[in-house]
Amino acid sequence: MFGFIKRKQKNAPEAAQSTSETQTSSTENVSELSHSLEKTRRTFADGMADFLLGKKNIDSELIETLETRLLSADVGVDATTTIIDELQSDISRNAITDADALHAKLAAIMKDILQPCEQTLNTDSSKPFVILVVGLNGAGKTTSSGKLASHFKKQGKSVMLAAGDTFRAAAVEQLQQWGQRNDVPVIAQGTGADPASVIFDAVESASSKNIDIIIADTAGRLHTQDNLMDELAKIKRVLAKLDARAPHETMIVMDAGFGQNALHQAQQFHESIGLTGMVVTKLDGTAKGGILFSIARTLKLPVRFIGIGEGIDDLKPFNASEFVDALLE
Image (cartoon, rainbow, N blue to C red; front, side, top):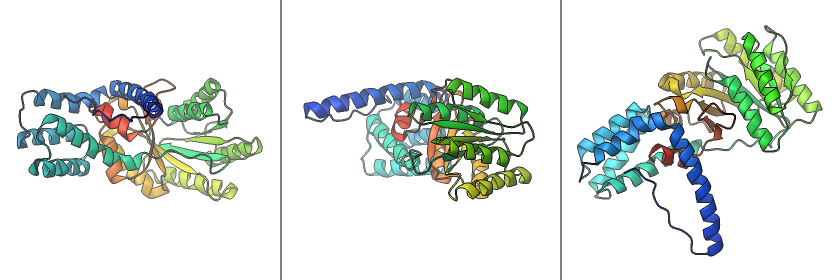
């Protein structure tokens, strides 16, 4: 009932072959995503498919059920209202008369909402390009830092990690393990060291060694912890002494399972220090994958990557179209 929308193929043989290869790659990505989003998909799409089986017409009861499913998946009130209003408008004009038309329109609206968040991180604007990784405790900052190092290294970039989480004793050791795993250097000091000093030293070292990208991990914190938020502001001030534009990316790592609460926290971080991008993790372990739609409508920040598993390659660049196709598969 919620299968993919078939796309027209180009006539030229060369274009057809290229399109076929692209579609194959995209289909594989969607299939992998669909498996990882199973909990969210069960909350939303599977329930809708079961409901539609006995339906011959698109009526108000179906739209109300869809609205409930969207909210249950943590799509959020704003995005849900937009989706339902556009669907009802088309239904009133008889532009939607069956389940296939409903699916096609639903997918199109959802992709339109998420598309502005699909912005690839350009790391070529500075060298070293400094990524400051921030967020709440337990969101997966250190793990994401390690996976980001792997991602960029596979792109042919030289990478250095900076252990700016000097509060949690295991954080430095964990990041060093990621450094060994990726065969990238890690700049670290002892527990309790000044994070700004650690990251400053790392950037100086990266500059002298001609490193392309430095990824700076930081301690988890709540926006209400003024001293820790001031610490992030200090890191940014210190980095500006080396490069007025640094950090070039202030990236918050957000656990999708925290839902709307995590979104509120991210808003507070954005107001306090100014975010430029997001990583949304643990989408494979939650039924709240719809939180990306709330992010799109509320924060309007680029979602650089999504975490869909525990493997080193399970941090994926965000693709809005593939995400929606996987959700509605």
